[in-house]
Amino acid sequence: MDKEQAVREFRQSVDEFNAKAAALGVADIANYYWYHTVELPGGLVTPGLYDFRATLPLFPFPPDMSGMRVLDVGSATGFFAFEFARRGAEVVSVELPSLYALDRFPGQDIEHSIEKIGEMIVPRSVDGLTGYVKKYSAEKLYLYLLEGPFEFCRRLLSARIKRCYSTVYKLSPENTGGNFDFVFMGDILLHTLNPLQALSAVAPLCTGTLVLSQVVPEAEDGKPAMLYVGGDNPASDEVSWWLPNKPCLLNLLKKLGFREALETGRHSGILRPSGYEFERSIIRAVR
Image 1 (spheres, helix red, strand yellow):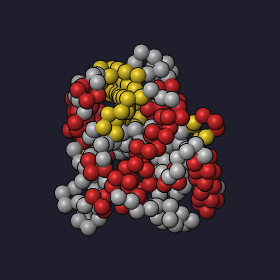
Image 2 (cartoon, one colour; image 1 turned 180 degrees about the horizontal axis):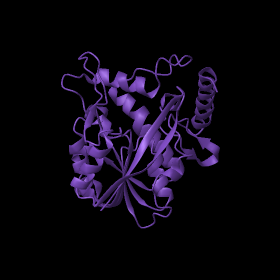
Image 3 (cartoon, helix red, strand yellow; image 1 turned 45 degrees about the vertical axis):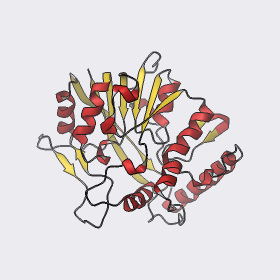
């Protein structure tokens, strides 16, 4: 499929979804961004940029999670949180309290950060999507990107999921309701200026297994290191800074008290509608 056809099909799926969803009483549904593809009752499927349905078996998730407490850090649209709930888990979904809580490089402006997020969601360079990326205030973008899509799906799925509004650095038993048998972290660390601090906040909450999925560079020399990806232009605001390589990430997890940490595999896919091929490592750490 060429890019032009992919864009046409994406726009068609967005228009069809919006028409069906609007009939359910959400007047501003056309403003929503859908990070994840989520299957909803009545044949309704969100037009997500990331579709993990086909690669879900690659993740080391127990088929039956009944009786387990699960923490999903950075839920976005909520694909993984809803999957854990479907498998019987008691799920706590973590999301930022607002976009003002995003990590920002010293001197970085929130408005530029918001614009950068819009460009990441749907690259402006993709032909045929003029007008898809809209400019909103931080409050409106938070609603349309995070809270609105998650709540829409949670309502239709009747998912009994608790929400915790916190930065990753401030997670604790007090605001999450205790410790967890299973913790999942998606593309979280690359959006933190202090990935070790982020990991050290999450690790004590996990009494069993932690699964982390993101870009993890290989290390040809075997030496643990972090790759800086934030650029060098003060006028160019980024929302990604650090990529720990595999030895670094595995060592950090063991240093934080996990007896075992290893890469169990990789999952890949195509980001809609740009056609960008992505690949993520899947890291599992066990107490």
